[in-house]
Image (cartoon, rainbow, N blue to C red; front, side, top):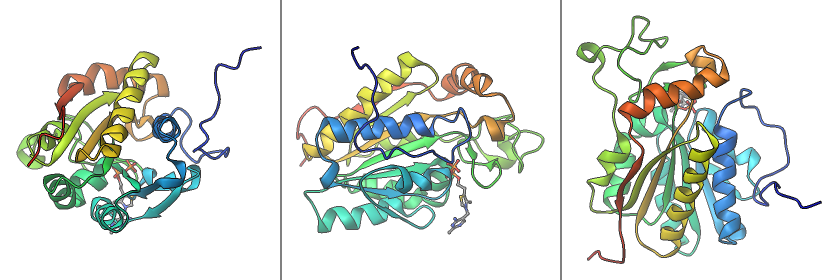
Length: 250
Ligand SMILES: Cc1ncc(C[n+]2csc(CCOP(=O)(O)OP(=O)(O)O)c2C)c(N)n1
């Protein structure tokens, strides 16, 4: 019989702690697939943020390190500068990357550090019980916005992929989704492209993956995927916001 599905070499065969139906597992697979595709398992170093994303180091068969809340891009910068030939990526949630880590994210991107940032946007602080994140949608109920996010008190949801695309140092900025198989295939291409551009030394690559957090959204897994499609994508459109075509930087 022809084998059509197998676990990427870069992922450890282990049960995960993620809630059943959570797309962190899918995101892990996409990253591991890119690592395997380029044959760089031995050369890759992952930097985890905090939150649900942090356990990445338990599931990948690569070198990995945990950074304090929000500081993954700074830690990745240090690693890449000391080991310029290594493939370095961060794996961060929205609370980590777009809230406490805003400065690190923006300045790392602006410096055009040759790393890849994998950004899991699930519109809440997942691990700590579902508080509002900078990406929480207007009207969305969270434990800290029980009446729904209101722009007068809480500001507007931040579109990170678009914002980072404005920075000169960024080589690639894209937003993809994982709510169905078709989108997962597109996401796979995006993650591969991000790693490919890093290998080519093009500058910072950023992939935002829209994700459901059905536990904190208090919906069933399939309803979570539906919500990604019907509510998240209209505000966070999918697409490539910047893609450097050559080494066209100074
Ligand atoms: C310096 C520091 N401050 C606060 C925390 C507590 N903390 C751990 S996870 C987390 C929320 C992370 O949310 P997000 O980045 O959206 O990740 P998710 O859990 O949704 O994957 C917080 C506030 C911490 N670990 N370290």
